[in-house]
Length: 136
Image 1: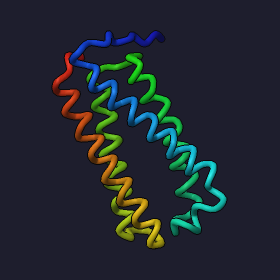
Image 2: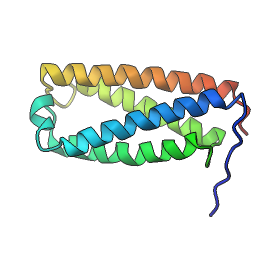
Image 3: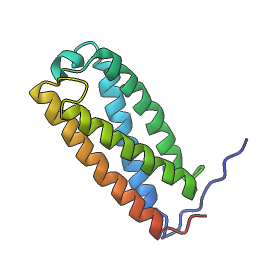
Image 4: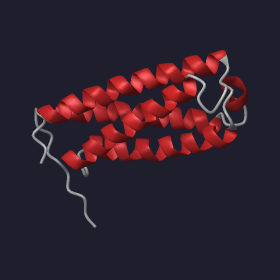
C-alpha cells in the first residue's frame, strides 16, 4: 500500500503547520505520560490503567500526525479523523478533569482542563485550516 504525498501549497501550509504542532504536542505528552507512569498517577490522581495507555496512544497518534504534516497521506478524510479524535479527546479529558469517573488531585484537575482547552483550540484551528485548504 502506498501513501501519496500531498503537495505543499499555500492553501495547505497552515494545515500542515498545525498538524506538525499537534504531532509535537502529542509526542511530548506521550513521552511524559509513558515515562512518568511510575509517579504521575499519584501526582495527578489518575489510575495507572489510564495514564499509561493514554501515553502510548499519544505516541502512535503523534507519529501519524507527523506523517500527515509531512504530506504523506494528507487527505480531507484523514484530517477530519484528526479533528474527530481531538474532539473526543477534549470531551473525555474535560470530563476526567471535572471528576467524572476519577477523583483527580488539584494539580490533576488543572493539568487535564488545560490540556482539554489546548486540544480544543488546536482542533478548531485544524478544522478551519481544512476548510480553507485545497485538499481532495
